[in-house]
Image 1 (tube, helix red, strand yellow):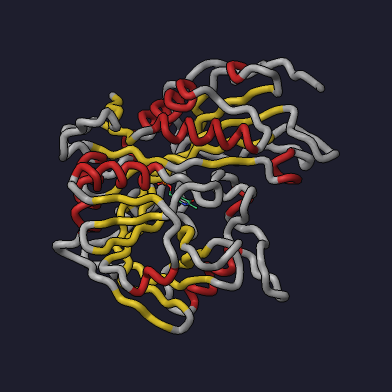
Image 2 (tube, rainbow, N blue to C red):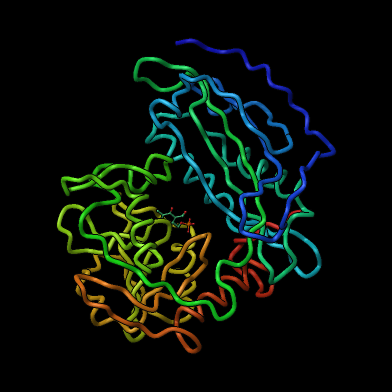
Length: 364
Ligand SMILES: Cc1ncc(COP(=O)(O)O)c(C=O)c1O
């Protein structure tokens, strides 16, 4: 195995040259600063060198980089929030670090340590502080990426890895009064298969071809097709039986009946969302019974409420689901469990509700 010497500068550039952002609080693709770290393929995770802050820009990759040829890549997503006093808050960033580490193991990749990951997040958020929207207006989305950047021709793990983070301001996913989600249950093709990588946040899960119909349809296309037909997103079923709920394209799903909340268990085919885990804990604190188990698609007929959880959406109400030409509608709005949990979670994330769980890291 080729071991590359690490020769990456270990300084943090003090003043960032930030290119102009047209609409700082928009949901646009303006990304404004990046943190890079590199590792050679060695036996120790500590071989990630110190990263550096750079203005957002293109990165150089060999055409034979493992990520380009064999999809050896992972990503994460988290947000920095601005508190009323100006301080920045990160929500459970170590959970993203841990998830990236376990994903890296599955993908035969080297990963930064939890400390390296969290420090890089802090630095990137702080360097972009002026782009963090005011309280109530949005947040700074932080996107850590781990890629097999080393060149490799035959199928094998990359000899070198790059870890970087970029950032973009985003507005609240749901504007006041915006419509609840309108989901479509996809039966023709799958997001993940048993013993596959559904539980890993790998880049190769998001535009794959996994279909059981002859005219193959990539998953991204499923989402686009659903949107074209007026749906907000696709709800996937398990690939083995087509009887149980899995998750939505980029968020987890919950159903509520009375004071009982159920969500599919993390059995390897769905992503173990950090919001999911937090919402389960908050719901139990609020006195709800929460079950993690196989949730039959037929249970959608009986549910009072359905909601989704994820970093992007927070806790999002589902107003309707269409399954086999039947449209089912659910309670949304004031007085719902979804709204109660949304308010609690966002309150903690933005420092409005006291964090008694040690979930928040204050930076600056
Ligand atoms: C497939 C999938 N499921 C669920 C989630 C929600 O995970 P989290 O709550 O950690 O953002 C995401 C987003 O990261 C996702 O991509």
